[in-house]
Structures are given as structure tokens and as C-alpha cells.
Amino acid sequence: MDVTVVIPTLNEEEAIGEVVEGFVRQGYRVLVIDGNSQDRTREIAREKGAEVVIQSGKGKGQAVAEAFEIVNSDVVVLIDGDGSYLPDEVEKLLKPIKKGIADHVVGNRFANYEKGAFTRLNLFGNKILNFFFRLAYGYELRDILSGYRAMTRDVYKNVDLKKPGFEVETELTVETIAKGFRIMEVPITYLKRGGKTKLNPLKDGFRIGKTIYELLSRYSPARYLYFFGFGFIVAGLISGCYVVIEWFARVTHFLLAILTALFIITGVQLLMFGLIADFIFRSNVEFRKEIRRLREAIEGEGKRD
Figure 1 (spheres, rainbow, N blue to C red):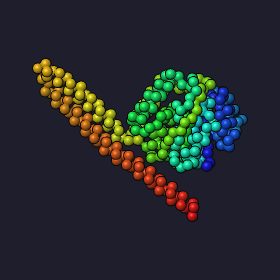
Figure 2 (cartoon, helix red, strand yellow):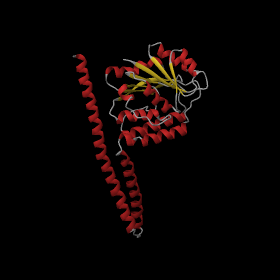
Figure 3 (cartoon, rainbow, N blue to C red):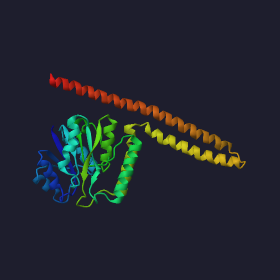
Figure 4 (cartoon, one colour):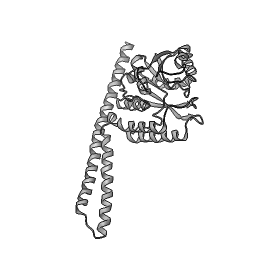
């Protein structure tokens, strides 16, 4: 396979040399997308054998989107330039793609992380965001925010990246499953980075959580109805409890009782509509998967002939 390693950077002179050298030593092409670093990041990357492109915009997400437009390799490996991931573990991510069992492989940092690699706040925030993702999307992924991942040309040329910042990993994950590509995780090592992190745990954590919710419209618009449906039902239960308690006290609230019934009926209907629409949407995704498998099988037969 033709593999290109993409490294978005911003002031990573302490670690970028080892990261680039680790991949060049294995024979991979390395493309560094630099966000106008004020240190020697670009010079060091070039010295170690990387191709360096200065980012036209700002933010990690914009850098990744720009790199995907430039590259045309069979597979792209995406990795941070801060030295927290091991270049020697790249084969772990490429192996499922080579075997043909995945289109997008994510490195799971929680499988083996060095003490101090996560602060307590970062670790807690990651766990919450991953739980929210599993709850909203129904996919058993444990580390959707990992910065070490590999994906085929079909994936990285078809994902629609609009988020400019640290939400890019979430967007890549959602775009992959929304468009019917196969995604899986493999265990990797995660090390404590040398310099100060650019990620703000609270500010960026809120943005990522917001992105997980907003991207439901791409994955399954119907799942928005679940949240509204549950909201109406909860409102109905609360008002219903109040009506019952007051009734036992010999106070009758006819209008509130009617409103309670409307809340609950509306909530149930929204849940039913959501289930039906979600089933149709997921069937469409599965249909696209089968079309892709059929195309790959036909292309494979053509190559053998």
C-alpha cells in the first residue's frame, strides 16, 4: 500500500524530529501541515525528511481537511506531532486495513497510557464524552478523540470536515459511520507529552460535546427526536405527579391534566417517529455498505482476470 503520514503541527520543535524520523525510517512519506509555528518546527521536520506545507487557515480541523485535499495515497495515517504516540506502532493501525476488515482504524489510548499522560480532568472528560457518543450513536467505540488513526482513500476523500478545531477527531468518526464505512479500534501506547497541551479541557471539551450532539443530523437526523420525545415525556410525568398529588388533597387541575396527557402522547409519538426514521436511515447506510462490498468484489475479480 501507498501510505502517507499526515502530521498537523503548531510549535512542536521539541518532539517533531523524533516523530518524523520514526516514520521516515520505516519508509513512509511524511507530510507536515504546519499552522505557522513560531519555533523551529518546520526546519526540523524538513531536516528529518518530511514534506512541509504551511497551513492556509487556522485550527487542527482545517489543517487535516487541507491535508486530505493534497494527499492521494491508498491510506493516510493521522498523528499528532507532540510525541505522545509511537511511530513504531503504525503497523497496528494498518494491519486491519491490509486485511480488508476495516476502512478506518482508531488507536485506543486507554489500552495502555503512561502515568501523567492524562490529567484527572482530561481523563474524566474523555470518559464522559465517549459515553455520550456511545449513548447517542450506539457504536461501541472507547476513544473517539484519539489523534492516532489510519483511513483508506475512500474514507478521507469522502468525509466532509467543517469543524476547524479539536473537534476534528469526533467529526472524522461520525462521518465514517454515517457514510457506511467500517471503523474499529486497536490498542496503542499513549505517552505523556513533553510540552504544554494546546487543548483547553473545559472550553474544548464543551465544544466536542456540542459537536457530538450536532453531528447527529449527519448520522441520523431522526435521533434528534429521541431527545425531544424523552423531554416531553419527562415534562408530562412531572406535571402528572403534581396533578395526582393535588387530587389526593382534593384539588383538581383539569387543564393541567389535559396538558400532561398531551405531553406524554406527543413524547411517545416522537419516539415512535424517531424509531421508524432511524430504521430507514440505518437501512440506507447498510445498503451503501453492500453496494461498496459489491463494487470491491467486482474490482477484485477484474484484477484477477
